Amino acid sequence: MRTALIDPAADRKPGWSRRRFVKALGATVVVAGTGALGYRIHDTAALSSGHGEAYDPWRHWRETPGLLGAVAAAVLAASPHNTQPWLFGIRADAVDVYVDPTRDTGTVDPFHRERHVGLGCAIENLVLACRARGLLPDVTLLPDGPSGARIAEVAVHDGPPVADPRYDAIGDRHTNRGPFEDRLIGLDTVTGLVDRTGTGDVEVRWIVDPEPRAALGGLLVDAAAALCADEQQSRDNFAWFRNDDEIQRHRDGLTLGGQGFGPLELAAAKVLPASSRTEGDQFWLDRTRTVHTATAAAYGVITTRTPDDRATQLTAGRLLERVHLTATSRGIALHHMNQITERMDREGATGFGPRFAALLPVGETPLLTFRVGYPVREAAPSPRRSAAQVLR
Image 1 (cartoon, rainbow, N blue to C red):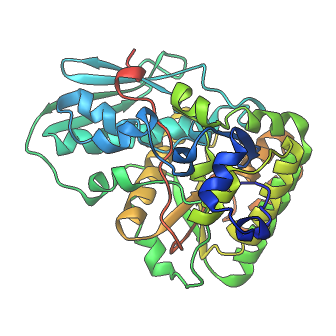
Image 2 (cartoon, one colour):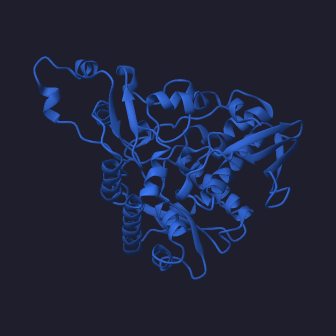
Image 3 (spheres, rainbow, N blue to C red):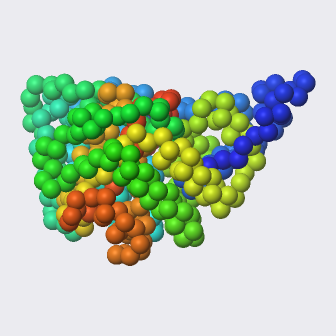
């Protein structure tokens, strides 16, 4: 994430309150994000995050019954760059899951691995929401084969409602890009976040000890630098950042409010002049070094021996969503950090692949990476398309 910093003296000038300062600035722009994010301020109401119709799905996801209600929970799943790459078809006794091909991050995800992980996350939320509504699900991945239109079929039949703390956590699960507390998190704690039921060879490898944790942190910083130096990847990142007008129109992407700022830092960031995309890249790199990797209590890496298999990628997404929901229910923050695998897909066998492999069991390939820890502050929600907007 990235932004410029305001001159602290500006708030201390006689006669200038923060409110008056913001009103005097009028419509200004700030850049922030994992790439660069233009954020235009029109009035002081924009200084708070999570308002407007783009955030309504977080407030109303429990209210709708039946399969449409299950889809309302599915749209709150994690996805790469908050692209929300899903569409759903509802039948009398099933939900079909499809790719939305317009939701593409280009060179950041050239083989669509991250896209399918995001679809797997949505499938997991869909399953949990069906069970909570007394609709017992039967999931078939790729029911029409690897080249078929349907990514999954979730058939249901009536049964008793099934309570699950992961379902209850769906509305509170957000990616936390802010600092984590200087507090250790043990291997027993993080392994307790994992439910590998039905995941085959998809594993979660935890990196907790100081030396390998520092090595992976350095690798994440180097990968961020390489991504920023790759102009096309930088531009493809930038395409998914939304300013305030775009948030309500698109209801997707990454926003300034979701970058982990404290309240005063966020208010200041929203009224500052814009920086360029390259300046934003540099700020994200600095933030990766000084906040993200510096405060990570542990890293999780989801691995497999079949990284190119679509069913494996969907299964990895289901496992990732389980971990994130369980972590949320236990007060543990999670931040998705996939710049290493994004560079690996861009570069092929050279560069980051061998360095990452040295930290993992022989023969296992990383699909995605995340950091965990106890958060300094709660994460803000991201904008979402409603269930009605993603029906096919």
